[in-house]
Every structure is written in C-alpha cells, then in structure tokens.
Length: 59
Image 1 (tube, rainbow, N blue to C red):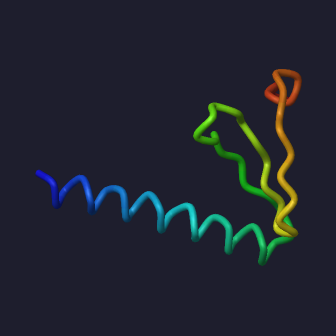
Image 2 (cartoon, rainbow, N blue to C red; image 1 turned 120 degrees about the vertical axis):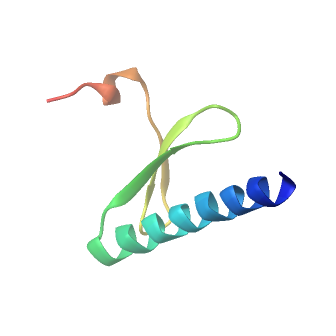
C-alpha cells in the first residue's frame, strides 16, 4: 500500500512539473491551491498572484 501512495504522490508531482513547463512554453500560468489553502496563479515568470472569489466566475 505504501508503494501505491508513493507512486501516486510522484505522479501528482510530475503532473504539476509538466503543467509548469507547458505554462512556460506558452507564456501562460497554472492555478493551484497552496498548503495554506489559498488559490493562486503562478505565471511562467515566477510571479505568484493570490486569487479571490471574483476570479472564479465562468464566462
């Protein structure tokens, strides 16, 4: 069971790393939840911007 948990953690980490690479290649950003519970945008430049509820509207 521990191997499965470790494999899943590795897969999640690799997926995040791939998203960062794609964002850098396309000049965009990724969105994720921090350990503190904040939703943030991380731009390919390294700039991190905290989002608020108004940013979650769908168009």
